Length: 581
Picture 1 (cartoon, rainbow, N blue to C red):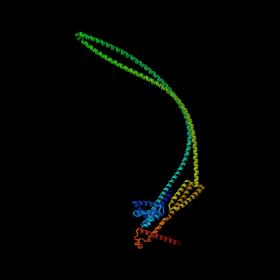
Picture 2: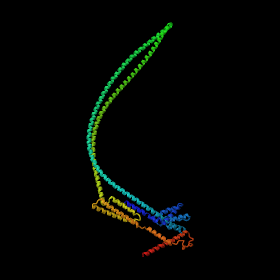
Picture 3: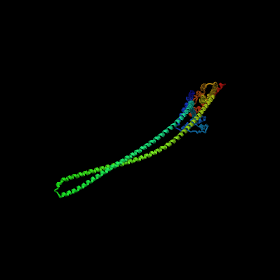
Picture 4: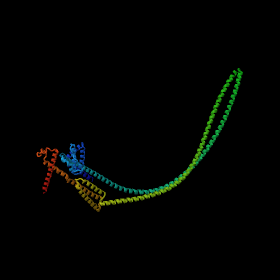
C-alpha cells in the first residue's frame, strides 16, 4: 500500500509540469509577463495604475466574461490618457462596455489605446491564469502527498492498536492465571493466620505470667530497698548523735581551757597592777633616796626585761586565744552545715518514700488498666479476624464474578469477530476500502485521470464480490484464516495492479482540447502571417493614411487582421464540409 501511494504521487508530480510545458514557454505568456512588469513599474508613480493593477489581478483570477476584461482595458486606457494629460472616460461597474466606450468614438486616439490595451489585458490574464494553474497543481500535489502520509500514519497507528488489543487479551489471560494463583495463596495465608492467632494467644498468656512474676519481684525488691533505707536512716541518726556528743565534749573542753586562760590573764593583770604600784613606790623611793639609785639600776633593768617578757607573753596568749576562738567558730559552722545537710537528706528520703508509694499505686492502677486493655485487644483481635475472613470471602466472590464477566466479554468478542469474519467486514478490510476510495478519489481529481474514476470503482466493487466469494467458499471448505487472508490479499494486489494500469492508460491517452485549440490558433496565426499584408508592403498606400496617427493605423490593421481571420475560418469550414461530403 505504501509503494502504491508513492507511485501515484510520483505520477501526479510528473503530470504537473505539462501545463507549464504547453503554456510557460509560449510567446503570449512572455508578452503578458513583460506587459505586467511595465504596468507595475508605472504603478509606482500613480494611484490610478495601482487601482488598475489590483482590478486587473482580481479580474483575471475570477472566471468572468470578456466584459470584465474590456472594462479593465478601459481603466488602463484612462490611466494612460491621464498620464499624457488627455481626457478620460468614466466606466463604473454598473455601466456596460458600450456605455464605457461610447464617448471614445469621438477621439480615435482614445479608442486605439483601448484596443491596444485589450490585447495587453488578454496576454496578462493568460499569464496570470497559467501561474494560477501552476500554483493549483502544486497545491493539489502537496495535498495528495500530505493525505497519503496521513493515511500511512493512520494505518500504522491502527496496526499498533490491533497489536495492543492482542497484548491486552494476552495480559487478561495472564492476569486470570495470576488471580487463580493468588486465590490459592490466600487460602494458604488464611490457614497461616489462624495458626499465628493461636500462637499469639499462647504467647500473650506466657507474657502475662512473666509480667505478673516480674511485678511481684519488683515489689519485693522495693520492700527490701525500703528496709535498707530505714537501716541507713537509723545509722545516720546514731552517727549524728555521736557527732553531737563529741562536739559537746569538745565544747566543754574549750570552755575549761578558756576559763583557765581568763584566770591566767586576770592573774597577769593583777601582777601588772602590783608592778605599777611597786614602780610608784620605787619612784618614790628614788626621789627619796638618790643614793640608792645606782644600786637599784641593775634591779630596774631586770624588772624592765621582765615587763617586756610579760608583754610578749600577753601578746602570744592573746594570739593563741584568738586562733582557738577562730577554730571553735569554724568547727561550729561545720557542725551547723552538717546538721543542715543531714536534715535535707532526711527530707529527701521522706520525699522518696512518698514517691515510691505513689509509684506503687500507679503500678497497681497500670496493671489493672493493662489487664483491661489486654482483654479488649483480645476481643478486638477476634472481631478483626472475623471481619478479615468475611472480607476475604467477599473478595473471593468479587473475583469470581469479575472472572465470569471477563470470560463473558471474551466470548462476546470472539462471537463478534467470527461474525465479522463471516460477513467479511473486519477492521482491516473496512480500512483498506476506505483508503482505496479516498486515494482513488484524490488520484482521479485531476483532469488527466478524471475519466478513470468510474472504472476504478467498478474494479473495486468486482474485488469486493470476489473476496466475498472466497470467504464463503473458504468457510464451507473449513480452510484456515491464514489461507483465506492470503487469497484475499492476492486479489487486492491484482486490483491495485489493474487500477494502476487503468490510471496509466487514462493518462497516456488523455487529450487536452484546450491545448489542441491553442495549437490550431497558432497554426492560424502562422497562416495569417503568411497571407497578411503589412504596412511595409507595396500594396499598403502610406500617402492614403498619412494624415492619421499611429493608433488609427493600428486600428485599421486590426480590422484587416480580423477580416483575414474570419476568411480563413470560413475557408477551413468549407474544406471540412467538402471532405465530409
